Length: 255
Image (cartoon, rainbow, N blue to C red; front, side, top):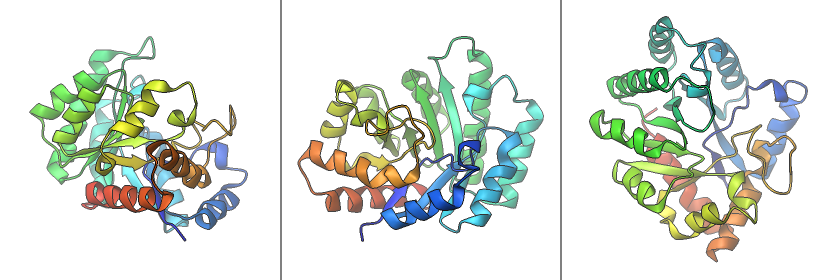
């Protein structure tokens, strides 16, 4: 059976509370060998830890998400360091910047992003980046505070921005968004970017692929997402599985 790595799955989310075991079993049956489960705030460290303790193929990433900047406090950075020391993650994440959602304090976002880059550098860990409409500003700080690579989650920037992330040792995350026929820009990127730079993700329960519509996304959808990528690139799904798994292991291997 083909093996896949879901490099971004919020499998601790409440949307899975009613059937998490069944959803996990479906993912395993589909060939999802590993899920990376990022935290979003100090408050959900416990849920992520519990999920990763329950399922051996779920690995944590600890971080403070930019969309929750209003609830983060300076003490949360100390809690993040303590959590990393207590349970070493595969990455620091989900961190980054969101310049799309109105009303989020950009200055505060930058502060927590920069401080978490310093934490990642100190622990020699890659980062999982939230990069919605913010690639240039993310790159500016990455050039200044060098970390051992990472993943630009749900990448939606330009080909030029992609090249800059790749230069800094990053892989680019692709999931359900590019499966929609009208997602012309993402589909071009999925075809034109080097296969060696791509990793697969679901962002479960969010960013559902076209065949789900507005329903709940789940890790078991990853092989079909891979099949869509294979069809767009004109290669076999075996080649996609092998390359994206190797890419994920390369960038997340320090955890």
